Image (cartoon, rainbow, N blue to C red):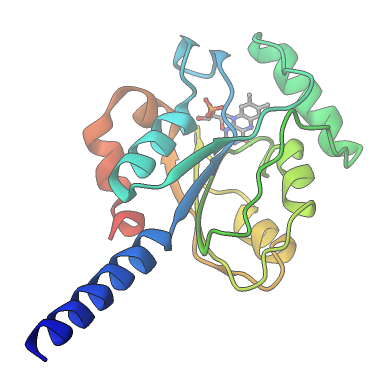
Length: 189
Ligand SMILES: Cc1cc2nc3c(=O)[nH]c(=O)nc-3n(C[C@H](O)[C@H](O)[C@H](O)COP(=O)(O)O)c2cc1C
């Protein structure tokens, strides 16, 4: 009888471990490399730096949204194209998609482009079902804070519980990991 009880407890412990392992979270990020405001020519984007910290600390998977047609490295050319896309309400094609159905918690990162999310992220958002998901948005910027992205995300990620955007200066994200981690504390709890 004692052996049977021990075996049952072991099975329950294994089942609990397996279900805990299934509760996966995901970091989704778009981030631009090349010439960028106040940070020179970068090989890892500012927002990607934050995404890497979050993925590491929360043991999340990480998915990078990449546009099918890369944005130019040149800062001025990139801002021109981004403005045009925004004016036209464009939905630029993305290189690859990601099945998000297995994730309940999603960290969603982006740079502020002209006060909003880059248009290729509308492409990604509109292709997915956000019902019931918990979203922790984070962004980098160079002065305008989160812009209008709190509203954008609540309006587009229908049915999700969208938390307030954590906004970090791009220069801080790029150059100061300790300050970045501190700024991200509300997401890392
Ligand atoms: C196309 C474009 C538009 C931008 N628009 C804004 C803006 O409206 N407000 C702001 O504070 N910063 C703006 N920036 C600066 C970026 O938000 C900032 O450099 C950010 O950290 C870049 O992150 P990334 O390296 O992950 O792409 C803009 C940068 C680009 C390239």
